[in-house]
Image (cartoon, rainbow, N blue to C red; front, side):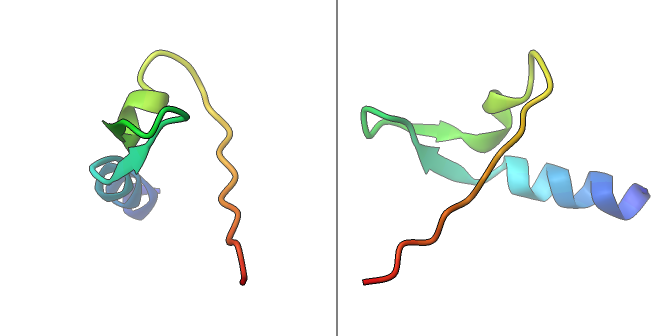
Amino acid sequence: MEQDNEMLQQLGQQAVLDESGNPLQLSSLWQEHRTAMVFVRHFG
């Protein structure tokens, strides 16, 4: 369980782009409530 928390902390520090193309810190998406995230990889 401790390893999961460490991984979430590291993941949360990553920058992603919002729908307008503005960067935001990933952890800001789950600070106020639980969040389900799906990552889709685009090929081609």
